[in-house]
Length: 333
Image (cartoon, rainbow, N blue to C red; front, side, top):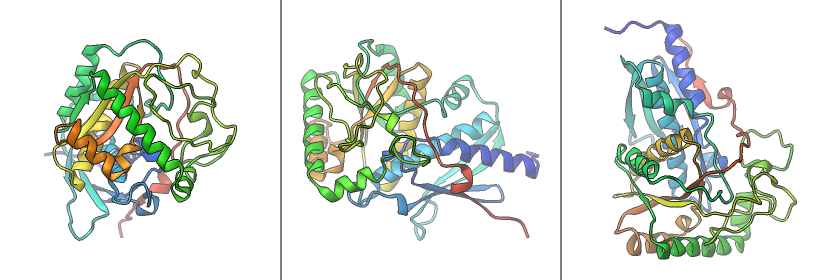
């Protein structure tokens, strides 16, 4: 029978939440909150942070929260406890995405410890990559990481298919840029230089003068006419890198949460080998383009994330809200 003190439980759960907030999220909205009741940690979607226009169904919000759930699972295992997870445990409470409890005592394996060590180190990249290719052996390992969560990661090997993905990304970006309300929603999550906000995309998180890759995958215009951005790495980083698509066989809320867990597992494994990811989900925010990709390029699988993988010298710091902003703890009577 497991024996653990109240202090050990509280410390472990707090460490899990501290890790969870470092998950990637669309525009770094960090659309999650957590509640602790005894030994149970609840992960909730924060609908106030959902993108009403570009993510009306909440798909990207749930993928983001799924990535946070993976960080919780890894942290509990790294600290010696098997996580007991229930996804969408209460149909009457749709914002409650998962509950996690500390199960049996376990000894973390080397791979778990490796992934856990990358949680705060992993960064999203928003430019091209160096010409150094990602080794095929590592790409296949990333495919296996997604598969372990029941999700498919498909490296796009066909040059024609890469051109299609690039063209649809640029088309979606151009259409979205013409929509004033859509643009206002996006730039509300853009930080000016020297901002003290602990959310959104900081000005140092993208290049000041991005150079196009070949083929070109359009980036979000967070600066929106301002001379913001970083000069780091942008002049030598023009490679597209390895393009990959994360897909699921179905497209339910549970699938989105599962996709987020798989995505984070892939990203952490990649980070351990100094590989970064750049995301291009513009086309997936447009119903007809997403359906086109599903039917014409992905054999009926539902695309959840389009990414490029590669090497970069970018070492920008991430920003996250403190645990006190996202955690509610029930005090014993």
